[in-house]
Image (cartoon, rainbow, N blue to C red; front, side, top):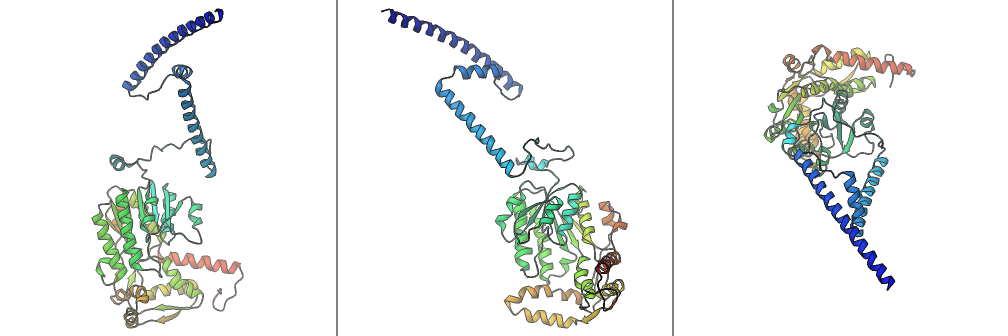
Length: 435
């Protein structure tokens, strides 16, 4: 009987204690609701006071406590996974999250569409390993852009782009499914790509570019820069020039904010076609035509291109040309002067180029060769690939006196090569060098 009486007293005391806790809990709950309601009306983040949160946990049922512990354990596990991922990527775990620079303005149009705002300095360079593309990458990095490079998977990775500070992503214009991931978070696309000599001009320069432009439309890219050929609209019978002109029209109809840059010729092409063969005492091929080309250094092309991006109301179509135009005979003469050697020139009649093009057009496996030999039509027209640049320099705010001339380019090239040859003690059959 005494034990039953003791149990009744303990149950009564426990009931009083529970009623007390219940009343205190209800009061605290009401206070918490008033606090959160105040936070909600003020527009601030809802947050439960630490004291109230601790009280709720202490008075919760065992099942609720177990669920709360499971949720906290899951969050801790996720945090450990994030730390492990950062450690595997070599990131600094103690570094604070980078803040947006004040001078970098996010794209307002992208934010208005409901997408994630991107920085105006985020750029994707297509064809970044080419003669022009690598110069665009270097100039963009020097100007403070965050450069991403789209390159095809290759046996020799483009490590020099990473060494410069660019991000390299794999992609292929002939594989449209590889393009969207490379465009995530990109504001500007600079298209420097073109097909290799062994590739189909149609597959790369037409189908690939159409796929790239359509992907840029879907990804809401804010700026697109396309490199074309000077007077491409005047030569519809030349496949590459016709494709360039059709791409310009397709880009104009796409609705993208774009700039088309028409080029006349690169000085780098003179090195492989004439400067090196003359040093190696090999034959160079020339014609009797009077076609003149205003060659420009790709470094200057890159500088002018980046300058156009800084202008709000830049022209839709720009033409870049060198300070002076030269015929093939004049180019060979400059190489002979600075190399100190006579060139072995093999003259190729224009009628022979035309006949070879017609002969190769009969075979499917030589159709790409035929397309590239179509440039013989341009040579036979004695057309000059030169354009006035005064207005372009004024619009872009660039000093024309800083543009490299072909004479300066060849003189620097030969002086550097001949100096290296003397350092290694090269012997010469002609002049002071031998390769």
